[in-house]
Image 1: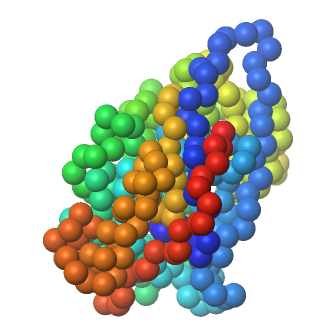
Image 2 (image 1 turned 180 degrees about the horizontal axis):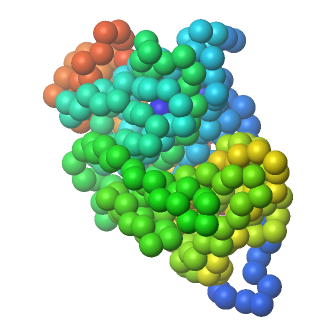
Amino acid sequence: MSNLETEPAELLCDGSTPIGTLTEAPAPVVILEPRDVPLGGPRAMGVRRTLPQRRRSLIGAWCFVDHYGPDDVSVTGGMVVPPHPHTGLQTASWLFAGEVEHRDSVGSLALVRPGELNLMTAGAGISHSEVSTPATTALHGVQLWIALPELTRHQAPHFENHVIAPVTLNGVTLHVFIGSLAGQTAAALGDTPLVGAQLDLPAGASIDLEVQSAFEHGVLVDTGAVSVAGTPVRQYELGFVDAGRRRIRVENTGEAHARVLLLGGEPLGEQIVMWWNFIGRSHEEITAWRAQWQSDVIDETDAAGPFGHVAYHGAALPAPVLPTVRLKPRD
């Protein structure tokens, strides 16, 4: 999904958070509240964004978390995101309900469905579109970005789809879609150490997850009443758990089904610059990519450029105007 803000801030995100250490008193869970971001006009679909924000820019290499729905497509019109560019990141699309058609400039045509991971690696540059299908009546899911490290951020773009088999432990159902958790290893591993999983907990259920102590973790609550390491996390909030823990307990404290997303990874160890749909290392990189997108695609001067062409019936998305002030450091 694109960042469709008309005046996106340019952020310098510090991914060099020190790795925690095992102590008798681990750091408390920090609650990150979402902010509402519209993806169009007043009736258009909106998202709840928990990353990035002032209190926390990254969790491992996870740098962008948009949570949406359930949306009545007959009211919002669903997801209609024209071709737009990305650099220096991976997009991870994960649905709870509905279906979205993905097209990109490397020739991929795929559907995003519940229980399947669509992972697009932008690398040196890619463009893609996302449109909910006519059969979709309700749309519900998350769009996630992963910042690529310096070593691989200029790689060739590519796309992959993985069907995730669920496993059940102590009554809790897990879909591990990136990395390893609870004895399960996904086909998608990431360019830095990462984990991503959906957990479905019946009323009163709990699970003690053995985790990598070098990882930072975030638990995003989609539905239900949940506590993370003993701290209540309300619906739509994200509970941040600093590195240094070997186990994280997730508990459904309510009387209805609960669903959460667990995201984690080693601190990236690099500063990144985020603006619109680009991730780079400097203001100058962002400026150059914006100019190339506008020239090659919007002005149609070079269909063979790094952002290529998407087989989409409609115009591509122009880039917003760059901010007039240079970036300020963000933690």
